[in-house]
Length: 173
Image (cartoon, rainbow, N blue to C red; front, side, top):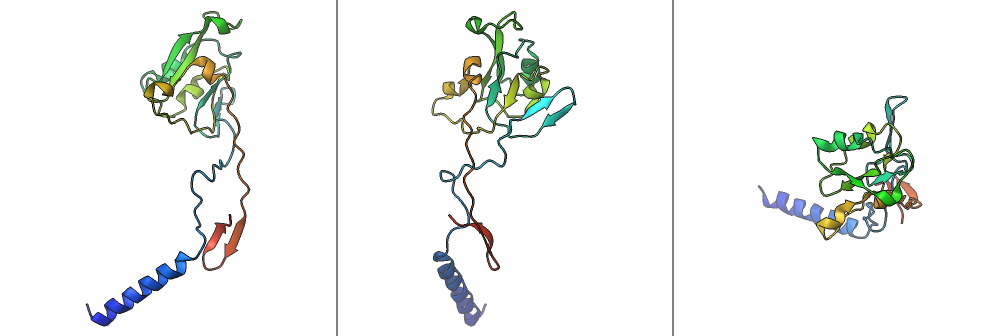
């Protein structure tokens, strides 16, 4: 390698780094933005036989529709073993005679959505809430009562797109 080629490459590298040093960044970092493309819950429509597209995050359990059939438990049994049926006598509904409801251990869940697909009564959904990290592993277990609380919708932030011929489109925040 010649010295002139080395110096030329070094000059180009320094010039490129200096030019980009004073530009706005194109990537939005995590704490600033939590934008979900859609806020639809992942569900399965047994009448049509198709899944309704949506994010696969934390589960939502509609206890008024759950019959305790344990199909979600059976679907998860050989995959992740994350769902177990818990008796909740204080939340008894007429259609659930045994008063058993699914609880989810997110330390084991692989977010495959088979439990939602197996539910024929539209009682189990997956929400776009994917922020369920905890410092203690035992806190990753959600009881049926915790799953029955609907998630707070997180509105997507306003995006100000700037189209630039050199850099392409980027967010101007």
